[in-house]
Length: 445
Image (cartoon, rainbow, N blue to C red; front, side, top):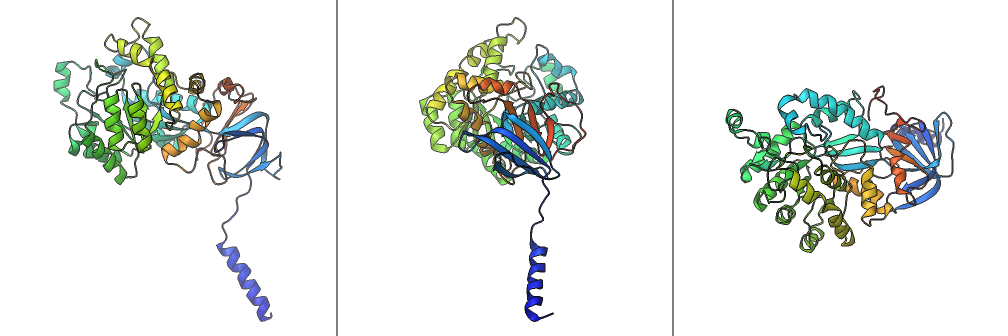
């Protein structure tokens, strides 16, 4: 062999050894239309090629890939899998919710959560941020291990509160039982002061949380009279945020009242959840700090409706549900028109799991264009999560796809007729499959 030939052979071997191995295309989705989450536009006739659980390519027209499974979605619009930034998979509201906390064990909630996760995935939500619920940490791990089916879960674990605050687990307990339990502290997610705040975040790290949730004001459904009073100081919020950043965590703040929102924003939280009494001053502050708004319109409507039903809520909760729930939609309209950054979130667990997509209807009713609402549940929600693996259908991202019949920009109610769901390259729902599946034959990627 001559020297030039030896050099060419050596060069070829070097390239072969260092090149990234290519994965064979597993499946091809022939989409009649495809929603581009970045531009907010729909493109006709696109093929999504999937390899090893991720998007390999998106191509014009209906292309073929030898040996790959082909899914015919030519009568559908394909979109990136939807993301719900505010769920509680460990529970679901009912007239028995308050008494069940004294009767049920964590295992009971865990088994219920398996069904709620399946319903959520079947509805087209391939990723969620669970903002409060200890069993969800184990649920997340079970989904990741392929033991049960559900969306990708960013789990907060136990929410962080102050004494008597919205997430104080001893609210509503009689004095004798409270004495036996003792006052909850940072381990239980209850803080008073900056040292406690730092310890509570570190405990969430120890527990395995993915995100931190604080209750910066009172809440609607907690067993307490105020739904909007501030419950953290700015210094306490900053201690939470600074400590969270040490572990790469983002912080979501449940907040209804104006002063609690102001403190949370100035303290550096990533997002304000609910934001009921948001006004122009708070809107300007959010825009200045780049704070996201997750409106949870579904929860507002749900609690306002149930407040009219005798016995559904305890009497201490009922007036808050009637008052605060009715305000959310007009707050959302003002925030959207004012240019606040908005991510999609429902607070499901207040309302029934699996009905998450109805939030799109409420957002558009309040004046947000359908395309912007879909962006809020895809590319924008991924920004809130800080993830570069979900939210858009681009090469290298997870192959998370939801498909609905027709054109959802013209008929937003199409989101209630999900026909196809793929998560990480695995088809979990397909046209004609109306009943939610409960099998777990494929491991979740």
